[in-house]
Length: 149
Image 1 (cartoon, one colour):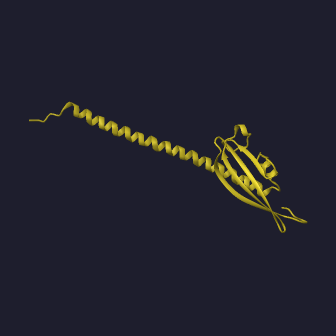
Image 2 (cartoon, helix red, strand yellow):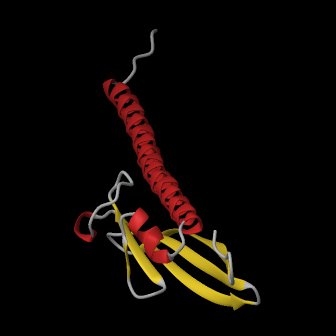
Image 3 (cartoon, helix red, strand yellow):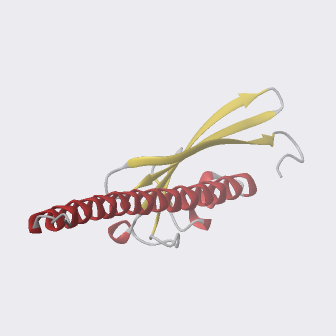
């Protein structure tokens, strides 16, 4: 005699297979969401590193912090602090439409034959003031006759 299967057993197997498939889809969606978030963070980090490097090059190539700030499209806040604002593509903009804020804090130190200017450059995400990247650079300016770069 042939053995008869219960009609509900096929449904249970199909239900178990469907639940396994939905579980696998859930895991894939979660992995995709995490990878999208990591990609966004990497893009922000790459852009902030580029902005900080641009700030360091401007500081090294200019004679003053004010000149460096103007070159970057920013402005000085006092004698030893400069601010510049950038949009999501890294282009200079005003504070109201900024995605990134760069602060350049200069510390002058008198030396025997001139001045050593140390500049700490920090890039922040404008929406929540989270620091994304920071670097420190320096410029030496000899004093006396013929001094300068």
